[in-house]
Image 1 (cartoon, rainbow, N blue to C red):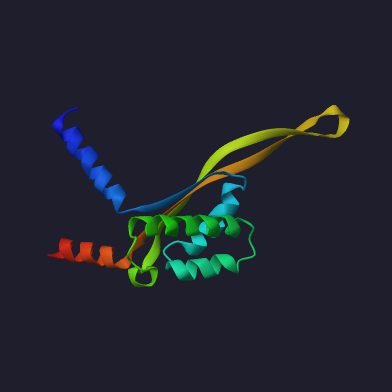
Image 2 (cartoon, rainbow, N blue to C red):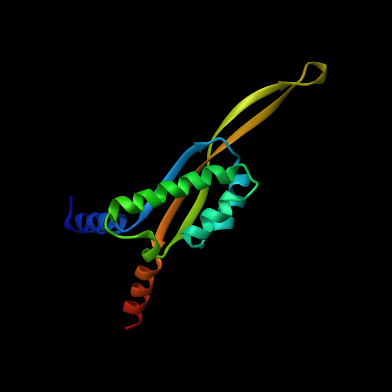
Length: 142
């Protein structure tokens, strides 16, 4: 491997150490319905996002709530002696990608068959703390 490639790989590794990510793959909900829930919590502070998800009537919000708790647990693993209240965690990114689609057939009148598409999705949540982003902004301004 060349030196530039190695340096770039090390930079990517360092960037991943400061990110707190959780992924949910092949969730059996259509991506369109899941995106409604994702838009609801994007950019919100973690405690507020958990409250929004807990009291939402959407079925997809239960899965996203569980995923957000997983992302918080990932943050706690990397920052063992820090408190969540002091860290000012917020949902930096959340995105929903289309997963595999199960194709089924439903009988229809006059010997025909209608196709049913059972869609699934992949959800990714990335958390960040306000303190880090403020420091980065201050460094770029100087």
